[in-house]
Image (cartoon, rainbow, N blue to C red; front, side):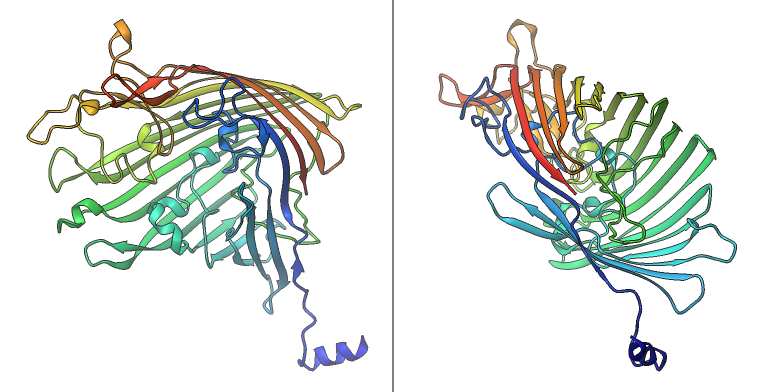
Length: 510
């Protein structure tokens, strides 16, 4: 050891902190047996509902599930992290870096590996500043998707898809500069993406800028706001005709949080992964029940706008607004937990990253638009002696939908099965259900409310392994499939509105 110290003093070698290999921070292994609808068999519904099987996906979730994550919860995945943190040669400066890879197992057995916002971070702490204060610069060499705007993941924006899904194949690197003080923070950052320009048929650089701030007005009250601007390239359909019509997007998001006894939370999919033996983060620590009353209430809103092709005027574009609101309330009293979740999303917000519907087009004049709205109430109670937590969730949703104006038949008449207007239900990005043209004697079909109830239980077998069960019932009169009518033309037809499903999981998290 003395020899190593002599070599270090002579500058021949370095005894700086080693890089710490991952022990798989945020690992989830899920063994699932489930059936999304025991009342239907293969080929009887759209999308298809196979019989009970090992494995599950988004089809086994309800509209109120996974509000603060991009995953369904049934995946087996891990984040492989190679992390290093060391003091710099300059006083007050600390360097930090993490190579983070997401390893995701597909239902087919294939394994996907992708960058999960690897980063290099420089943090400067001026003299006299607190332990958690500083000025930091974070560079994302490959993907800055975790650097987003908004606060609840379901309505966050500004990730890699902010330049449209066309940019995903090349990665979206970026950088963020932030100052953090005891009661406030502020940041500014940017991203770039390579997207093909349809006029010159070559890739060009698109730019995005982001900024925001937050302030703890009181120990229990925080306000936050952020905004951004992104280029999205050209409207492809107009570019092929020689018309240069750029698509630009901008928006603002804000949140107010009142919290007593609990910190302000954030989605795990926003955080930067680290594997520091001195400051170790347990992303999935067991739920704590300290007793007494604690609660938090947050209200978040976003307004976005982007320029899209105006379908009623050749070569013209127009701004399309998009709005979203989210209400989250959680309370804990002893071993009882209560939650209230509310969401409002305009149809243009749901399709914002596509962008539009059809892509790069605004809705024609006269289109009847309805936003998505839902409200869900949940409760569970923990039995500490048994390590058992039963619960219940009930929710009602009015899905987003649109009904186009009556088409004007010209020289190129549409097929008979497309004549007239129809209501299209949009459950999520590009997830559509086309309703029949008429609903008996009631006239045109409209989207109807969806009701869902779920009973849950969690049995913790150890600090890292738990058995989880769910039984849910959904009543949805908007379910449709296509069947041939008497003329042999496929027409949308209503399916049975009832769905009864279950999910059983043996899940390890570490």
